[in-house]
Image (cartoon, rainbow, N blue to C red; front, side, top):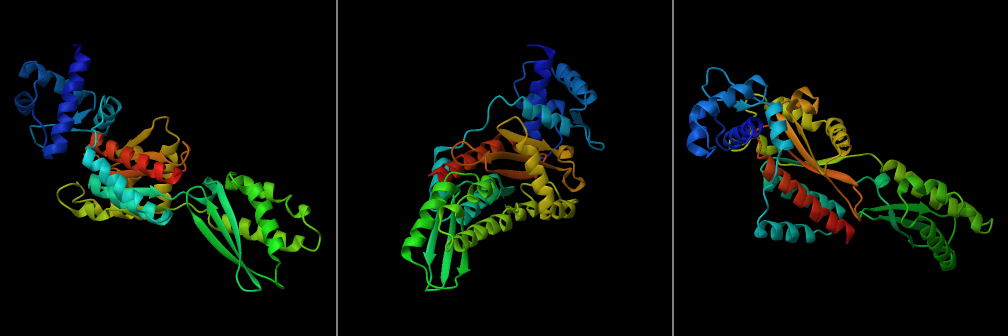
Length: 341
């Protein structure tokens, strides 16, 4: 084994012990708990090299060492295995999410479930209409002078708008509009619909075109209004619980940062551009002063292999990275499966 590989083993042992005990890790502890196969003197030399490289640090006057952001980053980048969820855990995820009744319920259940699994803060980016594709458009007469326009997306999102009419509509005209609009809209990303819908009125007689255009205007206005990005959080109470988090003296800045949706959306957008399936941002990599002691673990979810939005977990830099990655990945996988159904 090369000295680099051995030092990586020492770093891995320090990270695992510190995550477990929340106490700085000394060379004697490493010798006693881990079969590293080298002498205590060699471990002390490796720890000195890791400290010089900025991967571990000595807090105050403690004899032990703790990982730095750089050390956690190397640990995450070199993870060879992610902790597997147990069969009961997988079954619980499946059962809990499959009982959801609509998209709002799916998102709510997903974020609460992930917070429970990780005992950290969970975040789910809501799939916006502009990221979705149209699954179906329904037109429903309500009395003689109102028309209900129902937009259903491939994420299961349902938006309803009502159009006031000048007079009664024939069933034939409603059926014709429903057929033509669905033929144009079905399967298209909502950002592509505006141009596609523009040609639809010409297929109708001049007397009906104003009504057709009014329906199209409602569709476009709905998409414009509902395109705003938003996120859902759960588990913020975990920040204040002594067992899992490390924000005893810096809780307020973390909470304030989490309340700023624009901060979370920026991070999620940046992480969506990472070239890895599960993205991890550690400490200063969040580029936000209030989040310097946190790490974000996120991955994409969506139907048919397309990532519509992201789901993730937010916790202290001293988090169980393998376990958190496994939980985030598992919930995202089940969430995607439900949306594709």
